[in-house]
Length: 385
Image 1 (tube, rainbow, N blue to C red):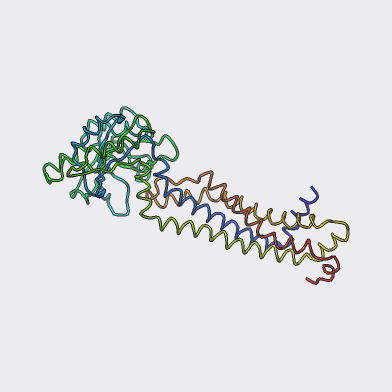
Image 2 (image 1 turned 30 degrees about the horizontal axis):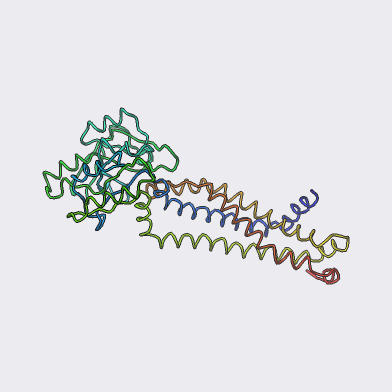
């Protein structure tokens, strides 16, 4: 208890220096947490992927579609419990800045494959009965102020034209990590329009999403699906939903690596600042430490004092930095809109922030404590400043 009181009094003997160091730690911990949350958000889609869902696409590239007739053949394969087709729409709502995922989906089977999308049976039924109906995520609805019954105009890019959709349902996420920023409308509406305007693009599906009865059987089912369409005009590639999502992340892997590198660079910089602060403090108190030794204090007591001051400063900075992470992350997510559908500060990020602060405190105190504890009493008493 005595040492604790001494440590708390010592850290604020030079208030300006201590508070500047704490502010630096706050900024570092906050920046580290925010950058780690960005990395987590990058992998959110893959982390939320189910191990009971497979994705089948064209083996050449995702941009090449598959015949709609493949659906029934896939459905007949052993181990398959459900199949739903979808097309990426890629339209523009008012301006290109308003980006959000838009999918033309199988109205009758899509939501059966995604139990994490929580929607009332009444809204689902209304969506199925309205060709121009759509279902949007809660985050998307809140972001644009949409409500059920609103008409949403979208300008097509991949599928040219001016399209109008009526919001018939708003889905919520079963979990915090569920993406609620997506826009779904009926594939039949898209297909019927294409039959009139571009027949050669009709009756095609971009992707098939497949539910399997047993996750352990996914590799065999994937191989069987691809074998079924081997040597056809549109061969397939089937993989788990997680692998499919990670494929998109791999396209931007360099950005993720850069963000990770910057997050650790921030910690390294504040580590040098913290080490300089503790070194200056220990140097100024050399005579005091020598006096304590002369009074009977052991080298370990000096070590405890220096490490205690270092950890106390780091703890204060870490607590404030972590406390600020939540509102700053919330504001950042609000500013970014739907670019990061899931942007939550995870428990692992909080643990990494605390660990980073602890490492900074530990490294910063090692050399000053070693020097102070090893310095002879006579030499310490002769020290000036």
